[in-house]
Length: 228
Image 1 (cartoon, helix red, strand yellow):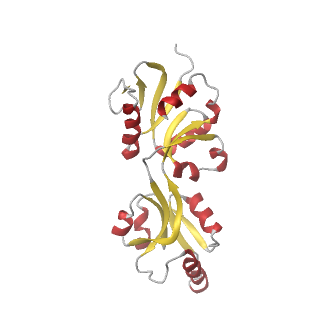
Image 2 (cartoon, helix red, strand yellow):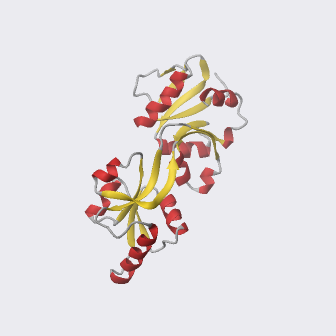
């Protein structure tokens, strides 16, 4: 039985998975799975003490915080969205030059008079006074969005959790504005949305992360050096 297994989490799908696998290829680390491409577990040739686990990028953060995964590649946005107690258990080792995107506040194009957060604050106040309800913000990033708006003095709003395509929320009556991650802004534009001039919440990118519970694990530094 092999002792001191090091578990590495890799995003299970999408561009983030592809770019992460390219890191292994560049380092000449050959990944393989015993049960084919759909296997959620893998190994690295000539590294019997390393186990690969394919996880959703959001799952990687939780797995790192409880130590079921020692090392993982995931997005900075997902780390910063997690609870502070979770963030405190994770260390960023390296920021990669892929997975680059911004978390932003976007509004319908028809809101011609709304250009900045100050304008948005006025709209939010009007909603409460005239419509007797709060301005609704649809997002998958509840913590980051709430914290950002509060820090800018915008307090009259309600977060609506998005479970699907956030961009459609202003046009289905679910919410008035959205907070979403975007790399080029093309999807927002295609859905008749635009980013507030001062509506950038967070610049994100893919990161190599380490569980602080694994800091003293045998062989961990060698693996981190290989991937960074």
